[in-house]
Image 1 (cartoon, rainbow, N blue to C red):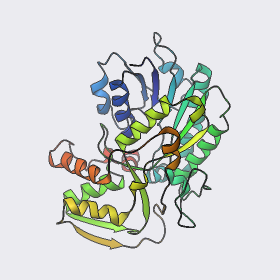
Image 2: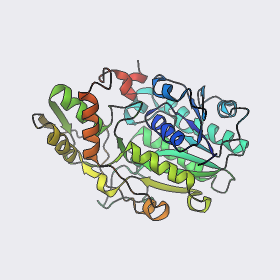
Image 3: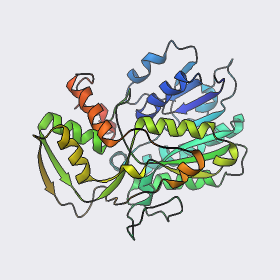
Length: 336
């Protein structure tokens, strides 16, 4: 039982909607702030929950966080900042000015309001994309020099630098660099590798794979929600000004490995391999998650095979209406 109050920006999105569900299940109070760019269907099940409060707002607004706090609820114990232009393709689609406005300047605005309100903890969603290419082939750690290969990573690094400069503030920053997510949530995405491969194999019975040998790191969205909550519950001495890679070494796979998991479930799929030598998302890295295990005791519970099975079941069962709709893809929907 807890009486803690958490405010989530971008809470109707892929991570936020699932995280909200889990926090409510654990008796947290949740204030959710979202512009509803991708719609609000993902949060409809929460509207009648006594510990849930929603306000439609844009994180670039100078009073968005202050105005979101319900008058008869206590100041949030933590702000989880998920809102932004998420992913390499989406940032490329909107351009540098808009991406910087939402991913960097809005982060400063949200953090400033949280600090002014007296919020004690600020959790920031970052990405392992910040590491870019691994120069020596060794697993990257939180201490590895950052090597951004995309506008998305550049914006996340700039926001990280600002937050880490606030580490001695009463509002303690905690940064998570998420691996590539997969799995079903109330607002599922099909522009993430595992989910995308399953969908394409299911619909087209065909996969076209670029950069087949490039390595990435993958983590189930439910494990991400668990890891974030562990960050909320850890002592301030463990999280203040800290960066954690969030995932598992057991999720370090090449694209070709992911194809193997898909073929296990849909062996009739035809696979075509192509080379891409420039442009696109050129990340090629494996990641160490030793720090989050050691400091927070975090271990994942789900595998890529679990995710493939879960997504395929949702598609076969018709649980997701029109999964080819652009609303399940950040970049395509944003540019409409």
